[in-house]
Amino acid sequence: MVILETERLLLRHFYRFDDQAMNRVFGDAEVMRYGDGVQTEAWVRAWLQNCLEHDYPKWGFGPWAVVEKQRREVIGYCGLFYFPDVNGRPEIEIGYRLARAFWGKGYATEAVLAVRDYGFNVLCLPRLIAMIDPGNVASIRVAEKAGMHYEDEVMFEGYTHPDRVYVIARPGR
Image (tube, rainbow, N blue to C red; front, side, top):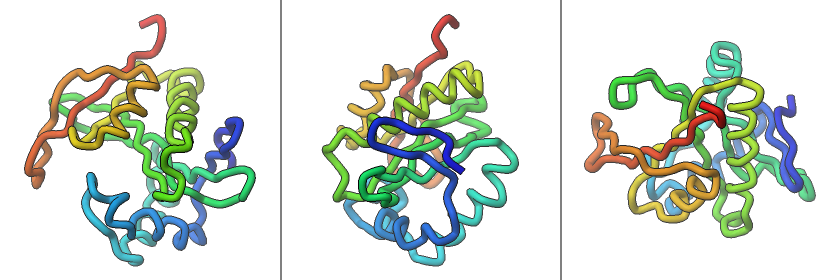
């Protein structure tokens, strides 16, 4: 099911057969440099299954496949993630990750802007966050282009250093 359409992208629910495309994302050490590291094919299948069986039915959102319209190719994900406790409060995060071949083309910003607007205009969320490793300068730029600003740091269990929390409130709040 297509959720959003931009000039160059479609954002849609994942399908089980998207595993190969997502293996190119989660299996690339450079893409995963600021995440939990390279993931296995079994991990990717479980992640997709969680999107389909948990996130979409429970929350009505989740990570969505980012499809380049011209090629009709899944190039990564961008979507919304529920976190029950970020510095003592529940939050909805915009998360995004694209295959390396699609970096530097403005796709991440295009997808994030569409998801931000969907979160505010369709889901009526009061605010959105992005939790970003301080070394991930490109991801910080994407968040800032979406109008987000630095608010705080968060330290999750198992982390060796805190992530930065970038925030944007729904207009008019």
